[in-house]
Amino acid sequence: MIRLANVTRRFGDIVAVNNVSLFVKPGEIVGFLGPNGAGKTTTMRMITGFLLPDSGEIEVGGVDVLNYPEVAKRKVGYLPEDNPLYEDMTPYEYLQYGAVMRYVSQHEFKKRLKDVADKTGIGDVLTRPIGELSKGYRQRVGLAHALIHDPEVLILDEPTSGLDPSQIVAMRELIKELSKEKTVVLSTHIMQEAQHISDKIVIINKGKIVAEGSPEELEKMAKGEHMVHVVTKNRGFEKVLSSSGIDILEIREKDGETEFLVASEDKKDLREYIFNLAKKNNVTLLEMWKERVSLEEIFLKLTQEEEP
Ligand SMILES: Nc1ncnc2c1ncn2[C@@H]1O[C@H](COP(=O)(O)OP(=O)(O)OP(=O)(O)O)[C@@H](O)[C@H]1O
Ligand SMILES: [Mg+2]
Image: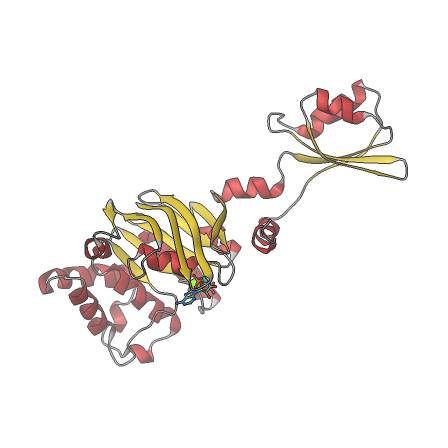
């Protein structure tokens, strides 16, 4: 598990992460979604214990990261944004070095190496210089490095960036597979990626969380499931609507027609309900359609709007 409570981090005048609170359940994959400069990397670096917050609390696997950074670091595997690798080393050497840095014994390392190499599919390239490997393999090596000490939590900063489409698919599948045993937080600025891979999406903008929920929940919100446009010939339908427990979000009049945008959470099919309501009250319905907004639009709206 990961817990952040009111975490804030500034760089000079910039508030990179602004009062962020977040809980990630064990075994969950959380997709951290936001545009450039949103604060994804800063948040992830604080979770890994490599960067200290100015205020707030961070806990990883039940360990307080600020008070016990060394213990917490052993619970976290981290694939940094640009995945810095030593080109002259072989994956074997690089993983061995990673194991030493995390106090993994040689004996333990031998056991872990096989498991990690199998999982990430790098068994055949263990003794080739990293500099000769493709980008896809380099990412796998980075992931293996993050896994070598068998951490409880994986923090993956843009793990698919720079990969070609087939490598992206393979990397996503690998992450899904790993998440069966680990709690995973990954960042991306691609909506579809977050949607495909995550149990929960957290949208961050200008250092603040602006929305969070399962892909289904966000999608529901995006599709405006309970929002319907209604165009009537007569005026006065608003009275009928509001006395029937429907919220009127907008009213527009044009050329003798009235357009309403209405919403209701408790009516199953709002269109059918409104149709019958209009019929009963002799209101002439001219048009009716569900509000359609894509998840992409919601994301853009949430991340492009100026703060009030
Ligand atoms: N070491 C630093 N020194 C100064 N400013 C920084 C530093 N690290 C991050 N920032 C600033 O903090 C803000 C958040 O940056 P961060 O790297 O966390 O964003 P991000 O969401 O990871 O963006 P990207 O999608 O581009 O990776 C930005 O305004 C950035 O310029
Ligand atoms: Mg970043």
